[in-house]
Length: 230
Image: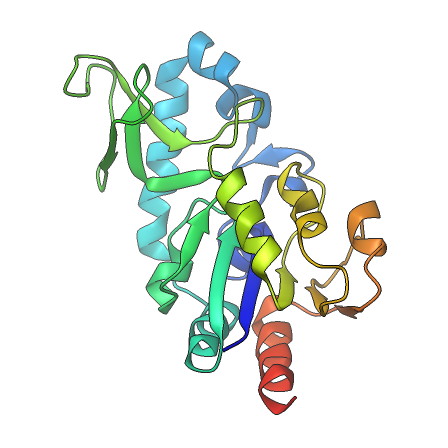
């Protein structure tokens, strides 16, 4: 069974109603990234950071997976599909995808601010004073800008194993995720699905690139049908 590796970005979640900061003049839900998504933000105003992610976590109950998510999940019937997502929501899992690697963390998890290996499921708000088993404050289980990406090595290994590589709903501007395709074999098919595709240097060098300038809700089902028919 061929291995399909899929890199997804904010665009696929945006179609379910989750806002992206790049589509709002650098604001994410009316906040500057520097205020809520950096280690410096956490150090300066942890209450604001917690409140922001509490709101994002609560928003998950108001959104549903879309046809892009479900098409990727259904592709597992015919291919060995592995999703590498830059998104921190759980829409891929709720759509039925069983192999999802979260590069930038997960909203429905929190971790100790001191001991990164202490990670806990989270469905409710986290407040100042909520601590891990060792007594340290809990923080969002999110990889903020400027932090090390722990899952990058595992993602690179998946890319190396890919027989087919899909890129869905990402501007290819956030590194290191935007360069994952360089780990894949150059001769495999690449499909870039995005309504406003921005082919970066790494992707432009791939000889078998197909650009599908459509939203995920139509582009992913279309490419999935194409793969099944090949």
